[in-house]
Length: 335
Ligand SMILES: NC(=O)c1ccc[n+]([C@@H]2O[C@H](COP(=O)([O-])OP(=O)(O)OC[C@H]3O[C@@H](n4cnc5c(N)ncnc54)[C@H](OP(=O)(O)O)[C@@H]3O)[C@@H](O)[C@H]2O)c1
Image (cartoon, rainbow, N blue to C red; front, side, top):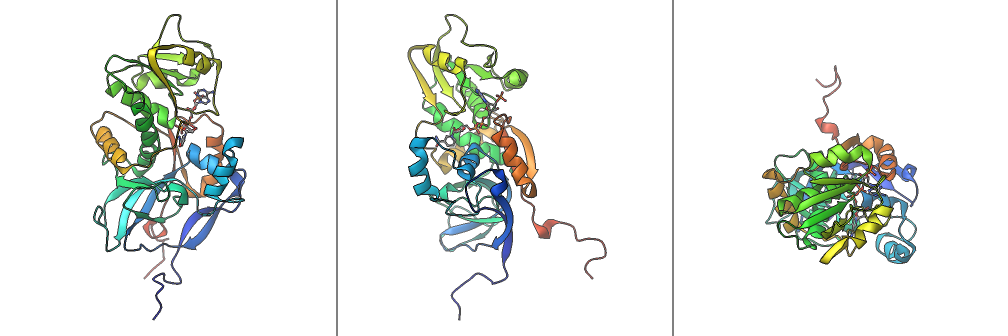
């Protein structure tokens, strides 16, 4: 008897990346549907996302210093794992015998780790966290799957990096890049910690950033420095080293004595299910509302990557993953 549990005909829709390059390298494909090992759950994915990480991985466009470690980790000439996609939200549909944290029917959100694979109908996940295998948690009950992908990515980044600021009530905090996936959550989280928050964004996002609770807004396209004499206890650069302006450089000089400047590119993103569980509570309490700017279908993945690569998305960009068996049968089909 065969030991292979994968039925020969079991395939699923996915997006594969067979070489590093522009958005057009992404292709729809049929790949083998995964089946969980004893220490895995299988997630039926309903939404993924196009994040900054997906753009870096697809294009291999990282700083010269990071080229070697990046390619050793992700694949020398192409992604080692051809089904790409880093973030997902879905429903557990099968669990292995050694799984204790999840059961079929649980609505979950997570990140895949270096093995990627979220641009697909199904993905098997371990229930323990690791950089290689990602992290998995119950998703916020009041969010759609699409919104949950923005929560997962922006929330993991925002909570990790705002916590580095050791923010206290009444601290003066500046979030540089307040309109991005992580910036929108970082601002709301800093407000929750009691800070007085300034958001830095472009002209088109001023009202939007105010609507998220910013006490002050600075337009990085029109202002080269914070107002004279203003000092911040904590400055978070939430867009990273690839995006800058005169204002960003001036913010580094506007720290109060003992103040901290943290870039979201400092160190590695921690894939923490504990942090995702904390985020779920904050979202369900209405303290944090993740922002979803746009949603694409899996078949429009090239267009979605083009848009995100433009660098001006507002909040997150989700990708809806539909399943053939959920679509109504064409009229006249069946018995
Ligand atoms: N440490 C790690 O391991 C790790 C892991 C993953 C990601 N990251 C970092 O996290 C970053 C944040 O990703 P994200 O998805 O939250 O951000 P993002 O969504 O990529 O940022 C988009 C926002 O950036 C704003 N923006 C564009 N150019 C800007 C500029 N020159 N100055 C200020 N804002 C600008 C845009 O607003 P406007 O349209 O108003 O310009 C847009 O709303 C990534 O880019 C990456 O560097 C780090």
